[in-house]
Length: 430
Image (cartoon, rainbow, N blue to C red; front, side, top):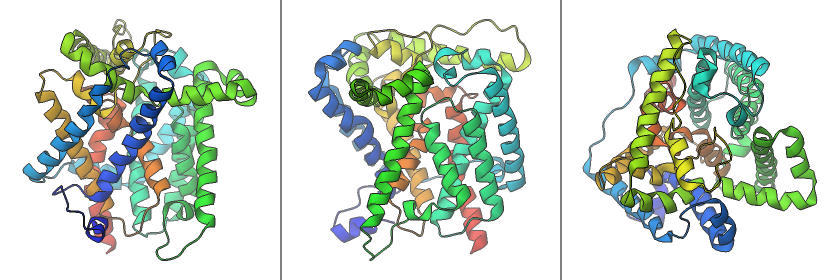
């Protein structure tokens, strides 16, 4: 598992977190922190026009500090089992997953008939949309975990059966019919690869065989997918016609690229802004937590009644963070993910908050270390890239997990059960 450390003579700093576990967090840091850091450096005035607090570069010190706490906690805390037997059985029950996928497709058709592609930015909120939409969002969160399960089974060297491919196809339909977020393009792409059984050239490295065509092929495929993701991100904000104009007008293309870089900068910008505000006046922290709790109560009420009142003005950490970092409030529905490191400052009681978020990261990286231990193949960088965007629910805003009817909580509890499911599946095959 830690062959690379041994080969390079690098001492292993952690007890339970593997090199591949850290590979996920390093890719996360590169895409969501290093690229935006460079963007802020070269386009400071453009960022300053839209975001608060970007001059507080010193706050990036919290990244190495929290990662140091992660290493310390991983060495101090003994490993322990996570997950739940019932949730593990759900992941393993193929008939149940077929039934859930058919329900998901039906709910997606209902969504398609009643909402548009820009639902997340122009439609009703999730709570106001009713039980059927809440159920669809929950199923999408669950099936993203199930896709991670399928990916690891594939990387173990097992071939997909026809039933596995059909299940991947049904999941694809569910996401495609009700698509309303840019990252769902990546989920659809992954489902397509699994359904057609053509993922091996993209995901598996051939040891001791140099193939100059393969990296070019992967780069072209990934480039096309990224363009589709960016297009979808524009379409669900400004509409399909305006998005097409942005991609076909030469003057708009540069602006689209810059908007995309700013879009992936919210984690970094949050880290620059939120810690400073936290130490000056952290009222927004309690407002975000209270709003998340009130939104949970509203969703529970809507399961049983239509007369539940309205959603609070600040209904999640996403919304609280958007109001905190953004100078131009352009939407009543907009939110902004704080990311792992800034999320520490949506937890009260400094410096305890740093240890709480560090412990959370330890749990996540341990889970992925266990998951990767079942892979018998050398995995490609595009595998980790797709995986990273498949698991964004656990990276966006950990504090929002307190909303147990939200997709973050649902994703997390099934993710914790994933190592148990893999163990039972692969031990049985052995």
